[in-house]
Length: 204
Image (tube, rainbow, N blue to C red; front, side, top):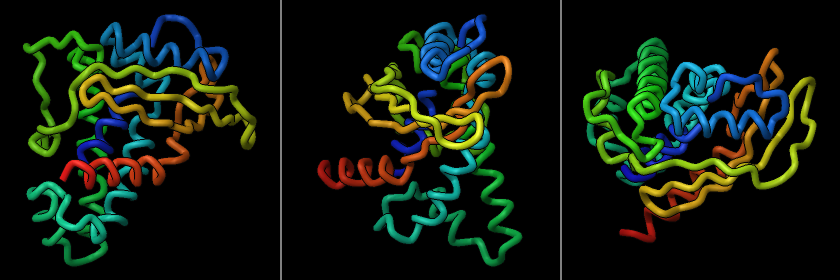
């Protein structure tokens, strides 16, 4: 269960009123969006739907390897999937729920460390995220960007989660989408998944 929840937390950690004209500035603006609870600007700078989709695909691919670590509700839903159409519907549902949770985390101020208790999560699978770290999230550029494809770069970023005290070395893919650079992928998502698995086993 911790593996799934921590992965969602990571995805929750990715703005300001100025254009992000460099990849590094995009990350700083994403952090400013978290700090100012500006969910609309955040989603201009972070393609949360695309990232949530990639996380869902990884989750479904790894579902049979988690040794009972999935939340009971999700395990029950997965056990009921009988065909490819049902699997597609489930994928779309989980992706929407992850996106909704990230939006809530920024808008509510939970990820800035200044939560507004009057704002409540509204996803239909909100209980899945009940144990996700809701502590402050901080993104720090950890090295120079490197070109990687047309109008794309890879940028190392350290994510510190004040809820559990852990640091996650993210490799973010950013794409130029005028007038901003936009975070579109966690390129080392599988490595982060494996790190979370190791942390979960160490606490058992």
